[in-house]
Every structure is written in structure tokens, then in C-alpha cells.
Length: 358
Ligand code: NAI
Ligand code: MG
Image: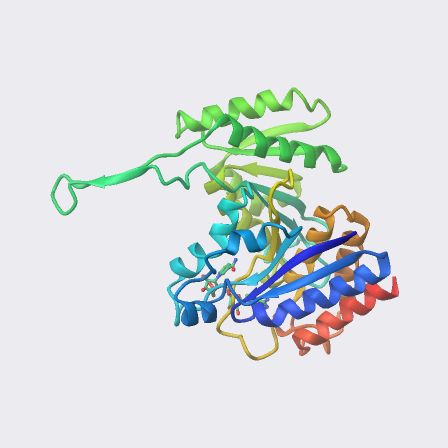
């Protein structure tokens, strides 16, 4: 049985790192006897918008829904299309309509990538951030009144549903239970946000009863961000609401080094809809067209996609290959953000060859 993958490279360096992501997936599929069937789409890009006046075709939902997974590059070209149009018109549609309620980001220090935190070596930082991706602080309930007068007032409500909170917590607990350290940290702010955050804490406590092997702790978001920097080795699985998770899922990868290597997944765990896998970075207009973008974020996202499709050994082989190639430290193949002089293709090929060689 083959896995049907919809490929959307998007804009800028998205179009440069995507071929390397595919190259490594093809090498991995060959080695592990997995059948991957890629279909490429030109929508969800600013060029498509300039031609059609919209980011996605009208029937995008029917087109993409039958796929097993969506493999995405990066979207955005602010000189041509304002960011709120390009992002809301594509990526955020996928997350909402396909109910990708988990945003998952590994934060892992890798060999050859200097952490901006002093004295941290490869392997010291190894945790996941699990972000709630559909509700919470990012709600559309609210409004504006008395606009333009002295009484002008704006309100935006945080929405937490029991279903929404419990399902993200369940995912995070399941993930923690599978990892060797079996530790879960919850991001809260129940000392200041006195209704929704105590509710979040209450649901964490209730969920914890079902996972007696998982050690649970919680921090208020302010000290938690400080601890990401001061004690990143404390963390194993960190779960947060939409806003807190958003902040932590940028801070976590930043603590490990270059943004070019960080991957992410937007997951619908039940598989009712396709999940989406993409690098954390954007389209990087400043380096686009030069062939020097680091393809590892895209390649690692491909590894997360294979995990999700049930091929965990194949996903691990890709991450191992990334680590092995980084550890080799060959300046002729590493991209400039890794202090090398290689091209996007050089680095992608080296990782693909490593996977193929087993
Ligand atoms: P960015 O991530 O595109 O770039 C930030 C900096 O990191 C730049 O200096 C860039 O050269 C560097 N960089 C990023 N990826 C790299 C890689 N693979 N290799 C080497 N260096 C890399 O973020 P920025 O500049 O804020 O946004 C540019 C566009 O991308 C905007 O339109 C923004 O909305 C969009 N964006 C899209 C995202 C997505 O598709 N999920 C995520 C973040 C931004
Ligand atoms: Mg963010």
C-alpha cells in the first residue's frame, strides 16, 4: 500500500529545500521498502496568489483531503503579498479545516551546531514542545465597540473546551509515556489568568491520574521561558495552550542553534484528516535564489512524516543520518549557516547517501 503525499513547496527557499526533502524521503523509502506517491501542487504560494487572486483553489479541501499527509515548504513573500493574506490564506486554513490540533516541535541539540546557550553540548537538550493548535487564546470570539470614540473598547475571549484541552493533554501524556524519561511539564499562568488557566491545571491533574508512570510538573509561563534558557536539560515533553505553546515552540528550537534545522508537524492524531509537516523557518527572501538554504528542517520534517505514517524506524534512520553528516563537520557540504561553503543540494545529497548506505 502506498502513502499518498501532497507536496506544496510554497515560496522562496521553500522551493529550494523541498527537492532535498523529497530526495531523502525517496532514498529512505527505497531502503525500507516503503511506497511513497508524491503529487506536486503550485498553490499555497504567493506566485499562485498573483495569478489567481487567492492562495488556494476553491476546491482545495476536496483536493487535499484524500491524501495521507501534506508536505509543505514555506509560505510568504511580503514584497508581493502581505503576510496576513499569505499565511491566513494557506497554512492556517489547513490547520483549522483539517483539525490539526497538535503542533509538535522537537528541540534537540545536534552535533556541529553551536547552541547560543553557553556550555551546552549536543545531546544536552532533547525535548518536545506540544502546542494546542486550534483554540485557546487564538479565538475569533470578541469584538470592537465605540470605535473612534473615547469609549473605544476591544475584547477577545480565550476559549478552552474540555474536548480541546483534554485531547492535547492526552497526546502529550502518550508521548511522554513512550519516552525514556517519562516526564511532562505543563505551561500555566494560573496566578494571573484566573479562570482558564486553573481549568487547564485541573485537566492536567485529571489526565495525570491515567498515567502514573509519567512525572508531571508545571511552571508559570514567565519562569518557564527563563528555565528553557537556564535549564533546558530539565525538559522532556512540554505542553502548552495555543499562545504559550507558540512562544515555547520558537524559543525551544532557538535554544538549540540554527533555525534552518528545526522541523515541525501539525497533526490530526486520529487521522480523520491529513496532517502537515513543514520546517519551522519561513521563505527567507534574504537568501532565496542563492542555493545556500539549509535543507535539514525540511528533511527532518520528512522524518516526522514517516513517524506519523507508522514508519518509525525509517524516520529514525533519517534523523541518524542528519546527525552523522553534521558530526562529520565537512565544510564543503555544510551550508553557510553552519559555517560551511556547501550548497542546499550538497547537504541534501550527503544525507540521502548516508540513509541509502544504511
Ligand atoms: P525566515 O525563517 O524566513 O528567516 C529568518 C532568518 O533565518 C533569515 O535571515 C533567513 O535567511 C534565515 N533562515 C531561515 N531559514 C533558513 C535556512 N533553511 N537556511 C539558512 N538560513 C535560514 O523568517 P522571516 O524572514 O521572518 O520571514 C520571511 C517570510 O516567511 C515571511 O513572509 C513570513 O511570513 C514567512 N514565514 C513563513 C513560515 C511558514 O511557512 N511556516 C514561518 C515563518 C515565516
Ligand atoms: Mg510562532
